[in-house]
Length: 569
Ligand code: ATP
Ligand code: MG
Image (tube, rainbow, N blue to C red):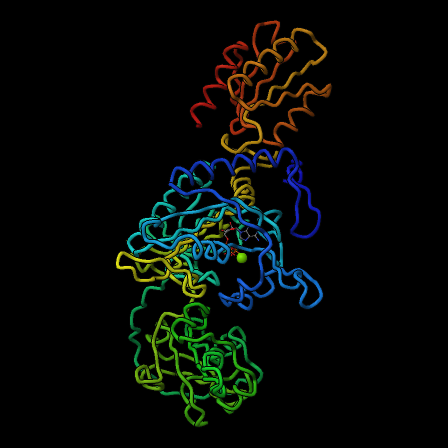
């Protein structure tokens, strides 16, 4: 985008949209607007400046952390009480509280196309992740869960149309809701190596989920005969790689023993009461697997954080790096055990021995540590891995693919309406919190994702729908009267027909002009040169298939352009 002169960076994560880039952005915006209107949503415009008080009402000042940008000012001054909106749930809910007082006004879906501000720690990849960006955000209000389901489906379908029209190869995947909160959500992902997210996909496409969310299918019980536990002296061998090499085993035969503290235990305690002691959680995953913190927190019903070395030493009686599941009870320190399902079916595994510089082999779940009981849970707490079988659909193998998130739809439920006391009167005259959904699309990110999926070494290959110009006329001999006459006529004719045409009449070499046309990626190209014109023809080609050049009359070329533009709409 920088090379094509679409954008210019002003500072980290802050960009200007130059005329060419702005044209494309406007086209994305128009597609989004059309589809939102078609789905029955109504456009409005909310402020960028929000009183921080609104964010305090929903408890999100802390949850958003550094992402929430604040104005600086002396204490008590309005500036110190003002933030830059990273999203608009609070502002819209304030409006619903004021205006949507009756079930008769529901459902309703309100949206805006508005600049958002987020204190992203690491802005990167051009306009894929910036600190200031354009978002379409929509919010729906309902009086029943069925109505929310219906509204959510309408938005989901609208998003499919939007991303198809923008020419994006996307998949909709099950996702985590994150700090926005809520009950269900889907992300719209564009598969490309430029992405930061991973999605789990089956080859036949019958299962698709964000890896933060993807469910691991249970693994079958291993059947090896149980061996006895043996302690092995493993001086200074702490990491999985070191230990597997030392013990001549493989990571999938090891148990990783991770020790966490339940940080939420303290904050959840009622005001006035002293905070409860943090609860220790011992989490077991296979050596080749990674803990999924979202799943883990859900199973633990608390927000877990890795325990400090002091706690680990107290529990295991050993230095950090030698924890194992089998002799933990010896220390008498109470803990809860969370066993990943893939560990529960292992036989003769290796792990730490709860003794500095020692590991143990022949550890058998169920025999050497409990898989049942009040303080034990066996659950899915790991990230899905490449090659795992899918838990739904055909059960075929899952592949992990890099992707860019371009849109996100959430069922929020009553999280915001309850926090902000936004209620309506139901049929019986009883006050009920609004049931809400929210739906976001990053417009600037969509533009970048489109380019990530459509380019070659020469530059952009814009889909017609969001190209800055649909067609380019290149006059090869701008000093030739005949050439200019035909070119001008064609330009006026196409413009009158509603085609966005760029006319390159610069007095430059042909090769130079072709390179530029390729770089900015205009989909349809007509080249008018003196020699060809003497034979009554011009050249028509498409950016996506540059070798298929047709030599046809100027009228036929213009007709071709109109035809292509019409079929794309
Ligand atoms: P991410 O996980 O990539 O940070 P998010 O989950 O924070 O995204 P949402 O809060 O759901 O994103 O915002 C809705 C949409 O806004 C996203 O789907 C994405 O297209 C866009 N978006 C979010 N953050 C940024 C950003 N920093 N720069 C550009 N676009 C963004
Ligand atoms: Mg984010």
